[in-house]
Amino acid sequence: MNPAADTITLGQVAHARSGDKGNHANIGVAAYTAAGFEFLKRELSTQRVRDFFDSLSPTRVERFELPKLFAFNFLLYNALAGGASQSLRIDTQGKLLGTAILELTLPRPENLRELERPLD
Amino acid sequence: MGCRIGNGAGFLGDNLDAPRLLAERGELDYLTLEYLSELTLSILARVREKTPSGGYAGDFIEVLLSLLPSLREQPRLKIITNAGGMNPRSCAIAAAATLVKAGLAEDLIGVVTGDDLAADLKRLQSLGCKFEHMDTGEPLDLARYSVVSANAYLGAKPIAEALAAGARLVITGRVADASLTLGPAMHEFGWSWTDWNKLAAATVAGHIIECGAQATGGLYRHWEPLDLGHVGYPFADLGAAGEIAISKPTGTGGAVTRDTVIEQLLYEIGDPAHYLTPDVDVDFTTLDVRQAGKDRVCVEGASGRPAPSHYKVSLAYRAGFTASGQLLVCGRDCRGKARACGEMILARLATAGFEFDDSLIECLGAGESAPGFAPQGDLREVMLRISVRDRRREAVERFTKEIAPLITNGPPGLAGYASGRSSVRGVFAYWPTLVPKELLQPAVEVQTASQWAAAATSPTR
Image (cartoon, each protein chain N blue to C red):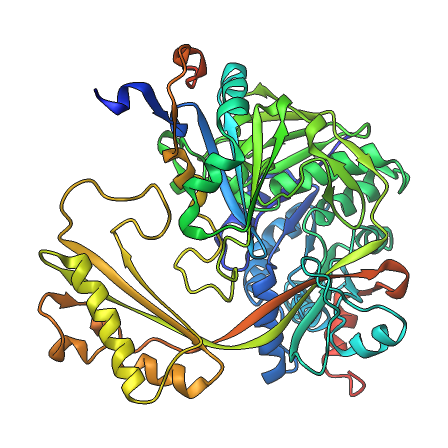
């Protein structure tokens, strides 16, 4: 059985942008559609995000909802190894995390078409 | 009547032509230029230590030179910038010299000060302000930390005051980024300082445009068709009732869409129900974002609550030294080889008597920078990046000399040593904290360019 057949990546249903708040990282995730927002409300849990970013050792992950924008804000506490000036990592400010989170795998929704980016 | 506020710079290091292009094509009432991150302020503080007349964003003076034709041709154009950094008065003097030479000697320059608390921390502590760390609650012990800079994020009031006094150019130090937009909005519309929803609206507009092209296609997930090579910088059209539309000059690259604006609304925020500035506590969860035309997006439903009682303070202290170096590592098992090279460097340094407070080996290209980037298939080329941090400058100096030797005494398949030894940088650690508003007195000084230019030679300065 091909595992890809019953999973999707977050990037199929959402776009994202990330940055720093001191030593904490923030990742804004916006679903393309209302159905996508409902799906992510169920599936994009703080635990899943915490597990995905395990290598950055966040001490806590908090999720906020912006339902009118079909969006979420994730705060990854103490995930930046000291932040802008102290971190030794190449990505001192968590700028990569918005691109990285799009690779997070989720169970494939039955109505995937309704979640994907509408064509203009 | 509405008012149009553009932003042509999102950080110190942003594109130098963007402010001019925006001013030429944007039909702006106000051009804002944002230059200060936490790190930038600490760096500017170190500059001022070495050069008392320095410590402001030097790029701004070059930008101002490029803006002179627009300032001459557009009498209504005004500029609001935090380019003053750690030294707003010196920045004003330099800007004044530029204006005087260009025949704009009678233009008024307003300078906002009062954000720089570094010399005042003991006095403020004696008044009962403990400067507790916002995350840990620990009070600041000045005997323990060598403070480099401490700046309060001032709000929009002093900016509006400077404009009310006729300033055409307003130079500040640390102010909340969004206040650069709220200041002129308050001046234009004469809103009450407790009309929280309107303050929230202009603050939202400021938040969206404060990072320049990040609102117009920069960083956007679907950037490919947007011609970012000619990206236009954003402006906000504000209405007297708190209407907001975000757009950019016609004929420029990039795009303003619902999605580019939403991504930027989410950028570097905490709890979206409480986006705090010194001016207002904004609720982003009530916002609606709607495409109103090509490259034009309306943001509706901003709501605000009373402003916080404290200013946020960004305080930085010295925390040792750091350096990092890179080597290209090629061939089979390049990742294992790169890691071995990094470990060799650290082992040799240990033999020489240098163990580091912190060190990190990264194999760039191997998916180590963040999760989700692991390459598919066999790797034959990675960049070794090795970094150290230590209290001792000499230890970090020695580290920078220990990378190149691998070219002859390490494994085969290495390149990239020709760029020379890397440099040692000071590390600043941050102490985010608060100060009660009533303890600070932001000051506004408005004079003509010729008066500011004369201040340069005045013995009292």
